[in-house]
Amino acid sequence: MYYVYDVDMTLVESDCAMTPEMADAFRKAMAGKSYFFCSGSALPKMKEQIPADIIENAAGLLPVMGGELWQGDKLAYRRKFVWPEGLREDLEEILANSTYPERTGDHIQDRKTMICFSTVGKAADMPARKRYEAWESEHNERVGFAETLAAKYPALHFSIGGKTSVDISEHGNDKSQALSALREYYGPEPVTFFGDRMYQGGNDYPLAEALKAEDNGNVVVAVQNPEDTLQRLLDMAMAQAS
Ligand SMILES: [Mg+2]
Image (tube, rainbow, N blue to C red; front, side):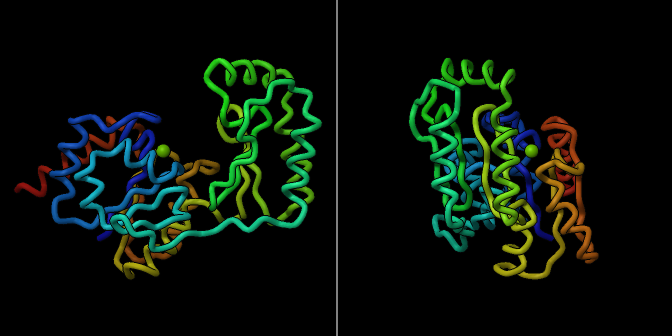
């Protein structure tokens, strides 16, 4: 059995580090088992959130929605975003024409597997972000240009990510990629997947559905929050010990 864990709100509170209690339960429950982490964040963030020894003992790491597979410090696989012709020019035009006046820099961020676009800029500090959020709550510019771009680039997915940006990726660039990577690099063993957003539209949903579709003993565990996962890990640790 392979174990795959979502990170935010499954093992940790959003953007937070794992608590010592969770880490202790995790080590005991997963001793001798093959486990993986799959999160929307990039690798450095994942490493900030999870203790180093737990990262080192993982069979693999699947950051950026499983768009990358890391085995130790080695990048085994990375899905690369291919820029369609005209997209960069269109983003620059939207940036030039946005009626929001403040520009902080880092507006078109190429994250290799996806693009993150922001008119205020990813370099915005917290006060600048808040100013944009307040403006955007009345203007909704992101919905407008995301819809225009989606109509022009049907192979791409435009999602209103966070409070200041639009995430641009290729369709299928979701957590179901993690399963393709597992099957290609590890093998056909059943997978148990823990996540907090298994419902339709949630970021764990595509992987949950892909696992169910295999019909080979995969288990999908929808948790409520980290406390719920902690209880399940404590139960597994207890079963391990007996
Ligand atoms: Mg989550």
